[in-house]
Amino acid sequence: MPSMLSSLGIREFTEAREAHLSPFAQQSSLSRGRIRPETPDPIRTAFQRDRDRIIHTNAFRRLKHKTQVFIAPLGDHVVTRLTHTLEVAQLARTIARALRLNEDLVEAISLGHDLGHTPFGHTGEEILNELYRDGFRHNEQSLRVVDTLEKDGAGLNLSWEVRDGILNHSKSEESLFGPGRGAPASFEAEVVKIADGIAYINHDLGDAIRAGMLTESELPPEISAVLGESSSARINTMVSDIITSSWPVSGQTEAQGEPAISMSPRVGEATDALRHFLFARVYKVLTDTTETQRSCKVVRSLYQHLTTHPELLPPDYLRYSDKTARCVVDYIAGMTDHYALRLAKELGI
Image (cartoon, rainbow, N blue to C red; front, side, top):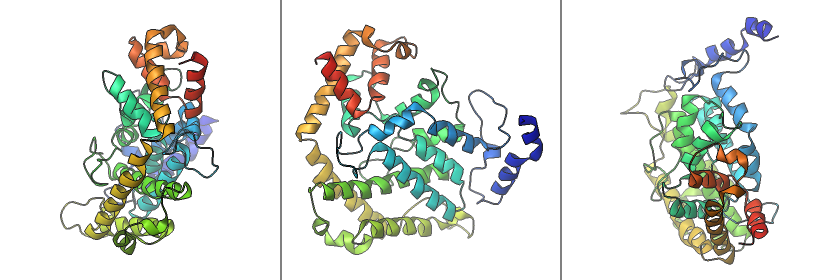
């Protein structure tokens, strides 16, 4: 059957269509390749294959029970790490399609970008970073998940472009367009980076309003005047502005200077102002809640207990490193909120 499929040239036809994308787009047939060379799939391009591998991982499935902002939420409509990931993929594909970039690449990066996120959102990340001697960042852990931890230690053997996008999606606290922790090598990865920000700004605001932490009317009027007075209006403003401001990336017009994924100063400043508003009125407030303090204690206690009693680690995790602390970090980072709470209770810590 594979040889018959190969003779049909399905993948080759898709790759040929990519030649009509923007000259700045990443073509799957020109990928820098994988760590371990593989025979091409007869149907799927390299980036489509990566997308499918990510979706079928245990780490991807666990995202449905990992916190986005509100810890171990009970409400049916609170955003989880999985729904956030799907929103990022949708926004990134919309922008990529308009700019004639590679949609399959942005989808694969989007679906994989948060695989290494800890339980309890950024609270869990901060505690592990404090405790683990080598430091912890969820973008680096996401790459470790796809390179090492999945498939019984074999990893997913993803293409270089997807791995680059996963590693370099983090942003600075100051600005959505700040340097962050790394510079993506493709425009597709840049699109995911900004789509990630647009997604969490808007759905975290929605969750905060549903939780009664603030109301829509409390948003600074100068922000609403630029971005809009509803979630859909704000998203539409941001996405439309990115497409317009980044239009030279589409290859449809001559670029004045270097093409870039960007926002206009007016919308960019309003977006950053909304982000800073969320840090002040939501994220920083949540750090003082009982739930957040409990999650800090749970992560800290699990780390200390498991590093002292490595025999309690699942045998699989001991294969991924010869350093106990590294194995403990891998184990805790992969936990869902409820599993971490349950394990801490079972261990009596």
